[in-house]
Image (cartoon, rainbow, N blue to C red; front, side, top):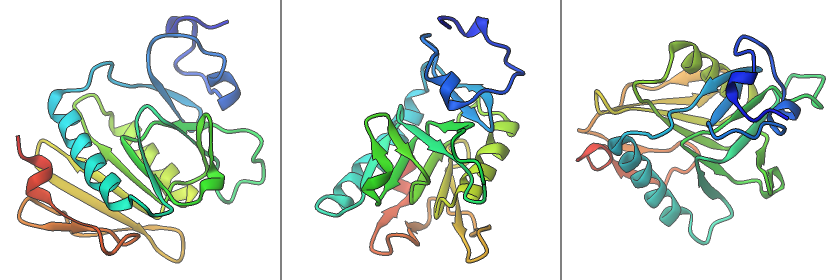
Length: 196
């Protein structure tokens, strides 16, 4: 039984089966089989931004088939092109995710690609983590991926094209209203997201 993160080789490769056996306090994500520690206590501003997204999306999706969830919430991903789906090497904890296909939901979270994911950057995010998450979200078919950058009050939006590759839109700033390709009726003033 693994009861401490110190018992693991942080350079090792792990699967979802391994992840289920871990019984330690620290929150981690598995991205392509590699362990990434999550911040134990996110900054107040990060929490506020996440709360605004969650509240607006929850209200927008009320009485619709799609549902919104927030971390901690396991999203288990296996690339669409993978021939071996019995091994899962990515268990992400997106800040916010939207799932429209209820068959992807179980008591442990979501298995398969959410329709939309929002990640909010914080100082502890590594470039490797950001690159790997971008790749696994793209590989798994997450239709829309928003990356909120609180230090510059900017949101970067990536939309999956017909070839399964992300197309980045122009950076969205506090002067803009953000809309969704997946949910065209959803609109949110970016200034409201980042205000203190």
